[in-house]
Length: 323
Image (tube, rainbow, N blue to C red; front, side):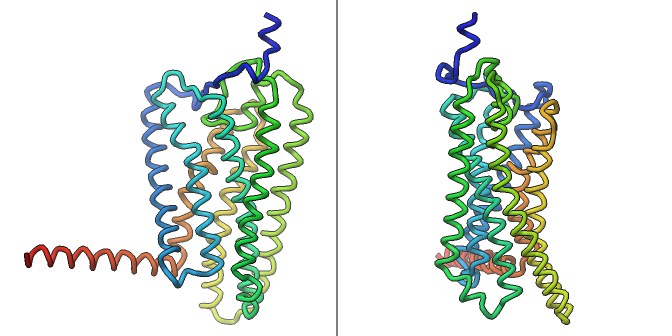
């Protein structure tokens, strides 16, 4: 018995994702809800990437960053949603050890990358509004690529540290993860080792990720607001606020959900699951809607694409009638 209690992670072959503690009858409703949200994520983010890549007028730094944001949203939601939907129908609700490692690594990679990318987008808006004459020089193609690459690099380093630290813990309490995906806090709950050092490392990582990005976003918008207030034209102010409010909305939803989740004590796991839904599924679903509904350039590009498709469809119908 003592040997079994001291068995470590090398002897664990799989885990069980407990998911939401609801009656089995509600699993089909959860499945349909996840399916609907995931379908909207696919449609919205793939559509946004197609619009940005096909319209030459959107070949600007802001839309380059927005295209990367859609790519990130698409992939980190795809790391979570399909497996969660499968488990709603599965009796075992299991995930392999390798699958759990991969899920945590990819999710941590993309969510941290998104945090840094949102800070980059705030800096981009700061340059565009506060220094418009130098915008094309300062936000060169090379710098934009470097900023995005740096965001992915920071996400990768953070993910490697978090994942390796989590899966070197001994799991001897249970194989049941009280969540709908592999996250480091639920995994820590089933570990029987001292969590002092992992908690210190996690706190340090959160500090160097969240604080700098929030500072960059806050400072950028302080300068943006001060510049906008100097604009005499009401139409000019509306245009600037329309662009910036989209970004602020995305930042508020993402950071609000993350901070709320990690402030919730461990004794309220169901609340943390609801909070994590906000940034795993709700945020990727809302981002394309927020940017498309409040952005005239994106709406105009979408009209062009739909107009071209409609013209092509009409021409095909005409040709078939002639034949």
